[in-house]
Length: 301
Image (cartoon, rainbow, N blue to C red; front, top):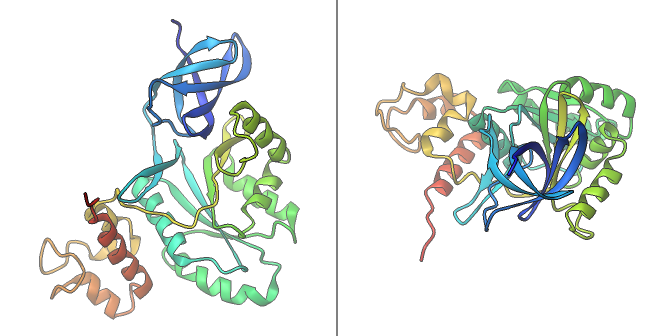
């Protein structure tokens, strides 16, 4: 059976929408995996075999450049494959959680994906100083922050995002209420129509917000919209991977008194000294300890 190659543009359970060119014609096909396997992600380039005119079965996933996923001690959830950058959408109001932002940054760092913060709703003048102060922590760590207003300055916002997304494969994540949908609609004017088409193709009914989907902006740029989530577990990252995913820790790694230092309460710890001297923020160190604690949890039987 002839194998074809395509890009996974939506996933719902074990059902996938694959965009492929067949005999010179661009098509979207409803594909499934063999058996109970569901290890395919949006952004994957897959090899598939046709089972009917617009349906197929996925036979293989081509090697991924990157994979972004979250996990707890029970299960993992793939967000997207082959990403080059991650845009974390925060807003002046309602308040965003630093926990989710920092976890997303750690996930990006450990996956080799470039993270950016998008501060939306900068037209809400009274809330702007506080929001700027809060994202200032991330600016200090070297993360780019882009100020936009989807409602107050749609044209300016579209331009900023277009420049940022050009030539990249990008995922947008953010808590609900941050205006992520408004940004997607600015970038992809027919996003709602495309989402309804995908929903119909995958037979997902009305649950259009529960699946991740990819939108092409031009030939070499696409943006992936993920469902809003409040939790970002990183159970799959070891302690060594975690300490290297905090850029502010890097200058001090290898300078602790003990080579197997956990940066928790050990004497002569370079990280704890930097924390004491205000070179590392208490919030970030607390998160590091929390993540190490989570990754050590095992499923009890």
